[in-house]
Length: 78
Image 1: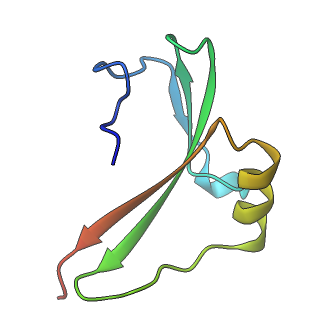
Image 2 (image 1 turned 45 degrees about the vertical axis):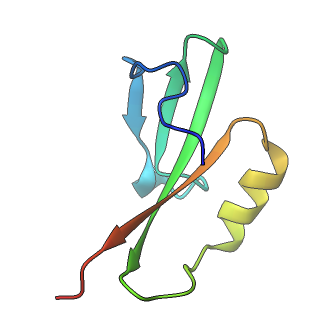
C-alpha cells in the first residue's frame, strides 16, 4: 500500500467539504502532481469486512480516478 502523502509532505492547501455532499470529504492541492486530490475518508470497525460508499462517491471516483483517494481508517469497537 502506498504511503501518504506520496511526496512525504502534507499539502498546505486543503479544505473540508464533506457537508457539501460533493463525493469526497477533503479537497487538497498536491504540489508534486500540480493538481487537486479528492479524499474520501471512511471508518471501518475492527473486524469488519466492508465499508459503505455513496453513489456520489462512486461517481466522483470514476470521474476523477487519478485524483480520488479512498482513505479507510480502522477504528476500535466502543
